[in-house]
Amino acid sequence: MKTAISIPDEVFQRAEDFATRRKMTRSALFTTAVQEYVDRHRSDDVTERLNQVYAHEASTLDPVLQTLQTLSLPQEDW
Image 1: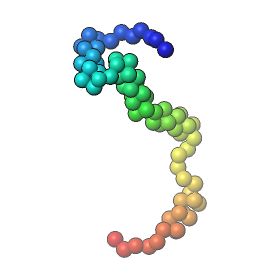
Image 2: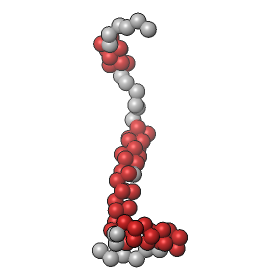
Image 3: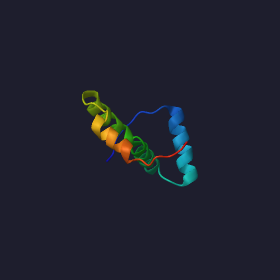
Image 4: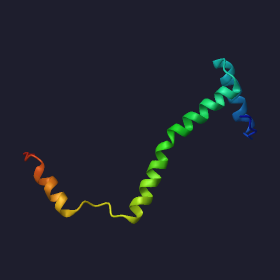
């Protein structure tokens, strides 16, 4: 898909230089950069959704379950 975007001249020139050194097209560079950025920030969506859930739901353990979990741990001397 063709698209038009506006970016600062300095960023454009750095991208051009980088693409030339890597022997890749500008389109390939921008595609790779956007894919990596989106992949890197994908977990932000998960965190945001979890924050929305826990804004309305208690995030503490049921006291009975907490007691049972504590009892199931082996006793260790510290």
